[in-house]
Image (cartoon, rainbow, N blue to C red; front, side):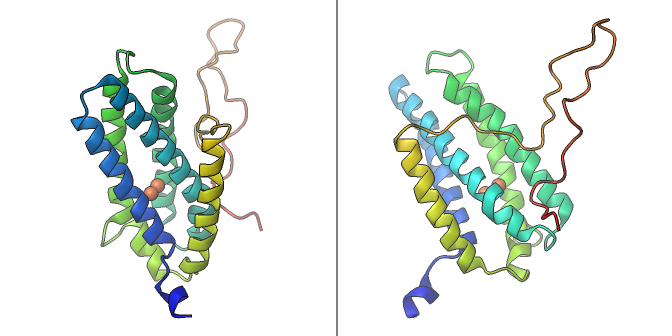
Length: 196
Ligand SMILES: [Fe+2]
Ligand SMILES: [Fe+2]
């Protein structure tokens, strides 16, 4: 059982992902050749898509109700803001005029988000460590899901990142052109809240 005791828990795995992506952003900034920049940009997007899915499918729901609600809500919205850029970067090529700017803005957004997760006094992770959550079991679940997603990425590829908190209000439907379009549905329940 010693091996199991030594195994990484959910937070260790998430922090490893954070370091991986930070390294990739640094490599992107240092890269000069378009092809290398493009490869790194695509890798950053893949890593972040998988990471946000692991957090949103497994980690965040497991800690909902056990950490500050506001902080967790912000985390979902920060993910969604990042996903808009991720999908843009994935769709664009090295020759796209704003590609480098988008990667830079994504980097800044992720830095801020990672800080909120890792802050040693009040971050999401430190709050989760104090909560009654089986982080080792979650870690196993996340590692299995990550392997599955990476396999999918290498095969057919992952679909564009899906947002969970945005309303998508950019499609006006009013005939008269004066009404403000109402979102297709009322804002959903908070993501990660267990119904019951
Ligand atoms: Fe994270
Ligand atoms: Fe996150």
